[in-house]
Amino acid sequence: MEGGTKAPTRHPIPWKDPAFTDAKALDDELRRVFDICHGCRRCFNLCDSFPRLFDLIDGSKTGELDAVSSDDFAPVIDACTLCDLCFMTKCPYVPPHEFDLDFPHLMLRARAAQNTNGEIPWVAKQIRKTDRNGRLASSVSWLANWATRTGNWLTRPVLQAFAGIHRKARVPKFHAQTLMALAKSWGAPATAPARKVVLFATCSGNHNNPEVGVATRSILAKAGIEVAVANPGCCGMPQLETGDIAAVAKSAEKVSAELGTWIAGGYDVVALTPSCALMLKFEWPLILPDHDGVKTLAAATSDAAEYIVDLAKSGDLPGDLAPLDGSVALHLACHARAQNMGPKAADLLGLIPGSDVIVIERCSGHGGAWGMETKNFPVALKVGKPAARKAVEAKAKFVSSECPLAGDHIAQGMEELDPSTSVPRAWHPIELFAMAYCPDTSSGDTQ
Image 1 (tube, one colour):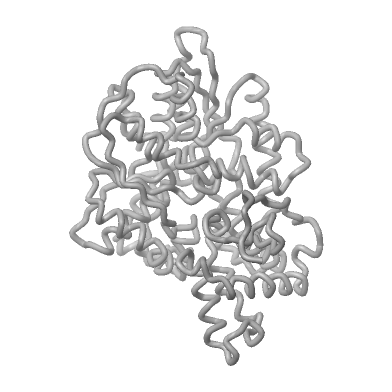
Image 2 (cartoon, rainbow, N blue to C red; image 1 turned 90 degrees about the vertical axis):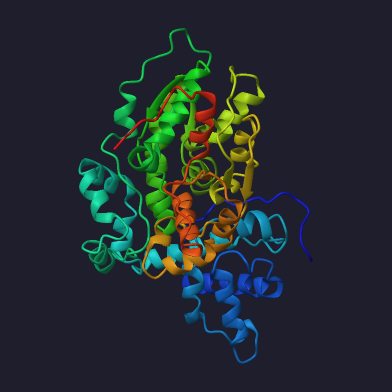
């Protein structure tokens, strides 16, 4: 039966069921799904998983999946960045279709089996402890930023040799003044607020990109909203990448308990990073479907751009906006698109008078820590090349993405495509909106 006409749905992830990581059951499902993908091939131009799968099949003796050894599936599994674009935008066979195909969650299942079998390298797990790593690096930010600077011939080869981070890959910067530290100086509104928001700082928003939280707070404060910040722990997306679903569940229980106290106090929860918003709103309820705290948090959580756009639509964003000084090449982050809420970042910038926004709807190819690893960095650049090319062609003053990692990766891809191109930084769309809405408020130097 070709395609389906109903909205995609997802099943709870049965990660506690022994059959979930059983080798025979997993292989049977991989073969079932791969055979459907082989017969369809609509997803050929997304991540590298699909070209690798189709090359395997096309290069076999029969040109069919039955001639491909299951031992050769590992590269297909490894190439999935869990961006969800195949599920959200391409696949005609997602549930409730009878084929019941969810490629990203099948790759997650395969990685869960790898994790159970001890096949995930120790170093890869350590790199993904982003909250711990952020705390350590922020305490010596000047040294961490010097050591990880692209082009540092002394330290980057060592980082590649021992941590598996490609010497050319841009890595996030760290800030001595984290968002949690900066928030200590924030005062309460002069009058009783009609709404209250707690920003879920996230690892990235706290340690690597506090300017996004500062800009978000400036916008909300101008709208008369009380703003607090909490950072109870990592959302677990880095652990999801390696199939450590038990660790993700532990994070969900911890974070939902702390943020639940804010919700009980009348606060809306706003996540500063799309990947983290996706975890809170969608992935956690699939991992812990019967957890009341997780369900409460999912219902109370908004993506940052989503929240501000909704304020504007409801007439709760008073004041005028100034035009931006230049056009914007805006990348829609995959994990924002996977939230199925519409292009909120584009809607946000569209509120600015005379805005000239060139929207880029292709995966950046980064995939979290995956895209920085030595074996994956060239693939990440290849997958992100269409997005980088469109950004180069846009010739915009600002390059922007809701995902800081994606923004930096696209900027690097632009410079690879055209060495005459220089992109000092990628901007978050909320930073650009803050320039137009509250130009007298600067994020300042948070180094």
